[in-house]
Amino acid sequence: MEERTRVARDLHDNIGPGLASIGLGIDMAMMDTTTSEGGIRHLDSLRSNVATLVQAVRETVEDLRSPTLESLSDHAHSLGYDIGSPGPALSIELRERRTPPTAVASEIKAIVAEAVRNAANHAQATTITIHGDADATQGTVMITDDGLGFDPETRPAGHYGLIGMQERATAIGGNVSLDSEPGRGTTITVTWKVDT
Image: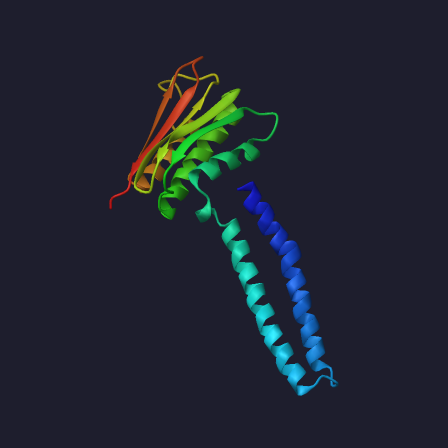
């Protein structure tokens, strides 16, 4: 994901303006009264080609920045940059044969991001592991930290953002469960199955 973001930025900041500048130069040459009629036709054709390239660059930048193109594994890796340093190490063991449909993937990514943020901010963990299996129709992802852990029975309702995570999972026909124990860390498991 970081590489796609860098390429999108380079296209937007360098290639796009360069093409726009070429287009402006062509426009100026077309207004030059000394340009022949054949030259004008040639310049007009070039201008059309440049406009097509500018549009292609814009669409490519949008595609590169679109979260819908990001696999679950790419998303998990990008969370490492969000955590920053110093912070817990992020270990990713996701086997993803095919990315789930966009609506499903968006909810799963949001659940994983919330679980990782909570572990990084509250668990005093040294390592967060994201592991599981996913394909286009079903999957299981577990987010495990080696932090403080807690007794789920004594925590106030909504702790760990579990209510929001469960709502997201329910929206895609999935489920979220939490397993934690004081001194033993926490595991949040999200499972889903898409009706075909």
